Amino acid sequence: MSFLDKILSAKGGSASDRRKKEAGKNKERPETEKDEKSKAKEVRYATPEKILVGVLKGGHVTEKTSSQAKQNKYVFVVGKMASKLEIRKAVERRFSVSVESVNVMLLPGKERRRGNRTGFKPGFKKAVVTIKEGQTIEMQ
Image (cartoon, rainbow, N blue to C red; front, side):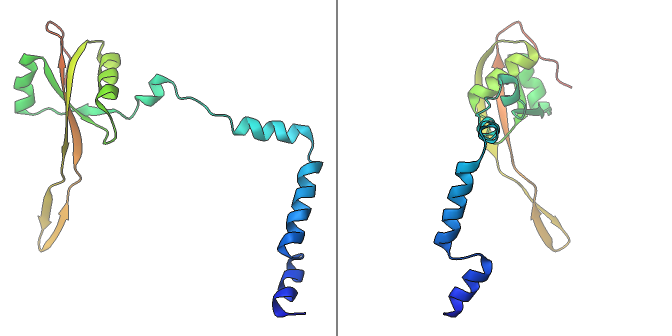
């Protein structure tokens, strides 16, 4: 008997023996356990409200964005993975307005120094949303 066989026998036999035992266990399992496991594997579809939760992070208010509000353009900080369509739907739902267009920009992080150490502020994605004339969004 080799050294490897001694180790395998101490663990409960060889790999092929263990597979046979496991196959026998699966056949003996009652039907209720199978039903519970199949329920756990069911695909749960997300509702549109759940999908749009992480899209809008907040408004981006600066002097420039305040002046753009006169042209019905509003700027929002959005999630990095948000698409134009998701941003459109999120703004229409949250503010009850009609969106004409969405332009997105991915801004890089800026380098910051403290003494002789350098680091980076995280970048972010912003969206410029144009809404139909006559509608407004209250930005705070």
